[in-house]
Length: 119
Image 1 (spheres, rainbow, N blue to C red):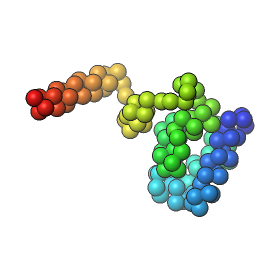
Image 2: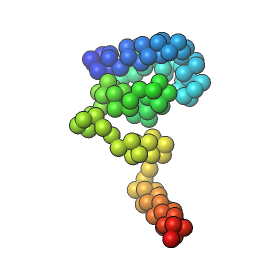
Image 3: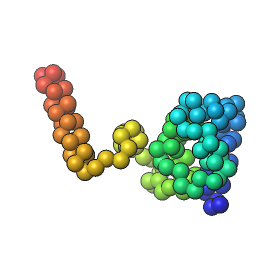
């Protein structure tokens, strides 16, 4: 097990235990199966997805960049992510380039409606 993964595993187990939560309680609140959580806490999951890490960071109240770094993912210098982008990516999941174009067009439309109301 890599050093980062070992740190992440023990950190997640520690946070959960400190908050006096069972794996099943975390499963109920996050939708992440208790079996997966158990494997994550024991280091058997080698590459936890950023979406899973995001759910856990939100639930446990841990900065997302901290949990990403512990998982071995690169984080921007200074440890600051544009959270509006990471929140959006976590909510949408993977999108095709066509979907991204459609989303951008729809967002432009919504913003133009808001600007007209302000006038």
